Amino acid sequence: MASDDDAKESLLPDMKDHSHLNEKNNLQRRRENGVEYPLPFESIFVKQQFSIKHVVVLLAAYLGGGTLCFFLIRHQIKGKKTSGILDAIYFCVVTMTTVGYGDLVPETILAKLLACIYVFTGMALVGLILSQAADYVVEKQEILVVRAIYMRGKVSPDEILKEVKTNKIKYKFILVGFLLLVLIVVGTVFLFVVEELSFMDAFYCVCSTITTLGYGDESFSTAGGRIFAIFWMLGSTICLAQFFLYLAELYTERRHRSMVKWVLSRELTFSDLEAADLDRDKVVSAAEFVIYKLKEMGKISSEDVSLVMETFKRLDADQSGSLTKSDLRLSQSSQAQI
Image 1 (cartoon, rainbow, N blue to C red):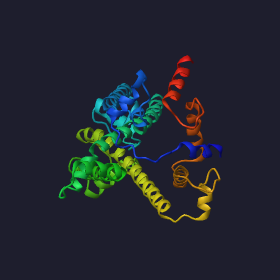
Image 2 (image 1 turned 120 degrees about the vertical axis):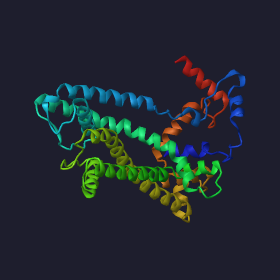
Image 3 (image 1 turned 90 degrees about the vertical axis):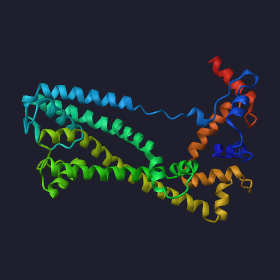
């Protein structure tokens, strides 16, 4: 626990609020004496922008390559067929989303092998790329959801942004839930009108599709139906997956918030003071109290503190127990020599 002892001397030494320091002043201080100092953590750790164009290119390449392959071996696939290219694209989407109706089935060894390869790569594409794209799109629409909810109240833009940041998962869950409901209704109506299924069969087909059960007793059999299914199937299956993902995250977040509230509101005992007193001087400093509470909340661990203190000791060139500009200059000089 030596690292925890060191934390008392260097973490939160004065507990002052530095929020009044603006970015211009910080930049000026970093450039003093011609030395560029590291930027704050928020500036260093810049979240990479997600590229929708990248996703579209990958999806187009995947569907294009699969369509070409399955079109070339179309005679090795049996089932209810409409037209060569359309059936090939439809088979790609049914395979990629793991719906697998069974209305089109690979018959030869080559076709089966190709389908096996395609389904695994498709699952990876959906899981790693398309789900991220869906999350990106949902994040972009969160502010619209909050505005719609508080439409009748006088809510400032700053309050809307704060609400979105505080309850991000909740609004993602609400938005995806609404989109999922729309997709279910649209799919049911389409199957009822275009595919001429009964209302119950249409709803049953929708449910078996978006959950990727794909029993196969009801499916899209017309050319128009399969064109619709290509887009609807991708959107609805991904939307359902995101819905349950956000539901799990919402549950976890609420449990965590409840635990944090309990940790901050409960009264301290003598045993708590003893546990928080890292240097055993019978006095708990602000830094020790913060570290103890963060550990209790599960936000950090002793290993986290040790790693941070190792970095601190490496930067503290003169071993004074505090960081100064001279320490940073010495650290940068040593790194340059290496």
